Length: 171
Image (spheres, rainbow, N blue to C red):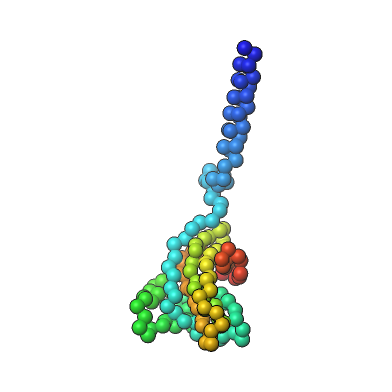
């Protein structure tokens, strides 16, 4: 019979704790009547592997990162591999309206590059991609490229290869 007040107090304490924890959710912060999201925003994007890097090649194996915001800027870095290529070109309007972010691997190892996700975290565009070694110590020097076309406003790009930050550039 003495347990009833104890149960009542326990229920009230559990209810108060649940209410307090519900107020600490990660749904955003309140600012002047609007809920502001925090955390990454997933972006839609298009990926092209059908272009070849035409810029100066480094002396040793390396990974290079590029950004362009115009067709002329893109054309100064890449050309379309037209010989028996069944894959489409980047539409010219995308090169004018969107930005491109590119990863180029150069060296005696051949890699497959695939995007995992493109996220906007505040003003930072995060390009998450996987790099898988396909062949090593080749007698020729492959240049592997992955070009991502994305429409977003950002001030910095962070390149994340296989879960590890490998590069960062101002946008």
